[in-house]
Length: 313
Figure 1 (cartoon, rainbow, N blue to C red):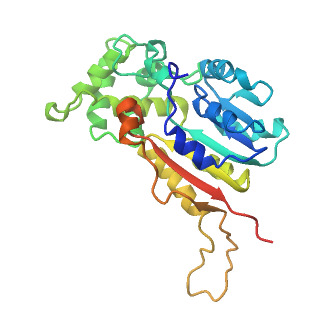
Figure 2: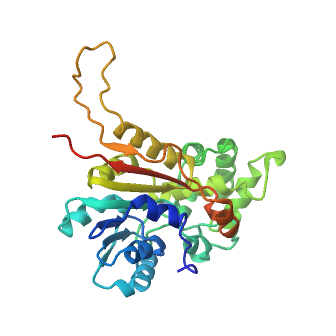
Figure 3: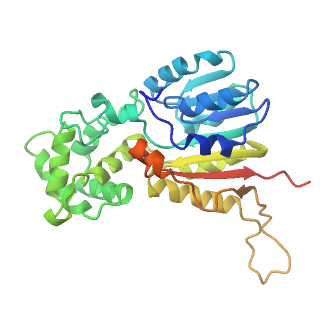
């Protein structure tokens, strides 16, 4: 398992899910099945449903979870289709949901996938689902300068989005950009020398990855739907790895944890809004120093946990 992907904040996630006897749990992004393994191991009566759009992740999860045959089912699909999966399984509400929005160590380290800016000869792919049509190479070579600038600014929060986009457009007039190394060179060339660092291409690669995989599309609606497919007292645990995702999760949690939104001057509530969840993590959990030293990729992770409130009679 660790060779494929090392699960982040494993203890905190398992405790956050508050696993109960006979519970049904959804791992919406199963990856290498590190979290799923512990969910199933925690109680012999637990049932697990898991999704992932990466075929290699599904294969690894099938292998890793084989000791628990008969207690889990895997579905190769985007986690945003989770409601269809639950309906297909004949499941209404679940006792807990985990969504780990990070990319796996296996995806980053596999040069064929093209996620890492540190692997110069890696092809510009970045698809989590290799069946998808859009690749990073298509984005880099066909998007307009305006759209590239927008993506770098909005998805990468890159201060030099304009110069980097211009660099790319000028370069591709002479030769198609096909490798991570070439994209990194063009990115660094658009950043003033005093602001360059060994990781200065990270934001651009993140932005392109988000665009290729539609990572933010429908995320707000999906997190809301997660909460509404929980049983009373059910738990929702979400791991994020950059500020854009975390901001959305934080805002959805806050909205679902808010009751009446009528102006205070109103004598009675007319909006009808009810509080749906209790936020367990007033501030998100982060990886311990020991975990960061063991697994540096855990440094940017944030874990937010919520509890579904019982329905009002």
